[in-house]
Image 1 (cartoon, rainbow, N blue to C red):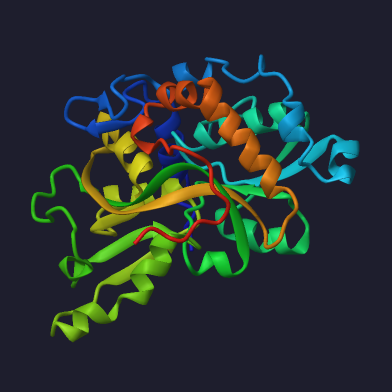
Image 2 (image 1 turned 120 degrees about the vertical axis):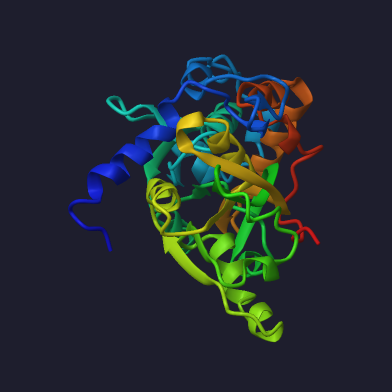
Length: 317
């Protein structure tokens, strides 16, 4: 629950991530050097257009259901929270940018479809696919065994789970086992793989004879960051790319602790959706023609490259 006095700080924290002109994604937050080898502000990267010149691929478009080809549109439900995944580079125009946005728009171009994107809370998107509200979901959705029971995925990057703390916190070391979190309060996103992982593994502490950790889930990434900055949570669990990006910005005051578990990330669809073959073909064409690598380099996330797009692969071990 948010208090009236906290709201201005939450808004400021939410705005912080996209506007600070530092590295787009950093594997070494102290230097601001991007994981892909190029430090670049997210707002500057957003101005680079790698998508509008792409031409329709008749081969990929032929895999679309006839009714979708005839309609010429596809409806996306998208979580737009923070760079480099998806954010508003210009709050006034509400024009979305980021890895998810570029790949979604690029696939739309190759398939000859107009992408109609609606912003939605992360935790609402996957259920809305089943109801037919959206055709596709984006939000840096990781492929997990639990999600594969009800959702199909077309993969386009490899990201995953990581941890961060306040920069001046030297007590918490890189997390290789959740037992290291015992007695701490962890902030994470509502409805995410992070929340699921943390809640499913809570017994590791009591099994080890230690005080359990506490999980606080937030629907807003700005609220998660603010809680860490204000000491209301000790550690944040979120995406590897997002936490690296955040730690590269001095004003965030955070330190990336490292990777915990890698996950494929994909476009999400209702189980059995007829759209998946066409989306897979389009992503693989982007990989083949070099657009894929250019998009990853633009956002400083070349470490997240995949060799090929897959439909609903098993979760990484």
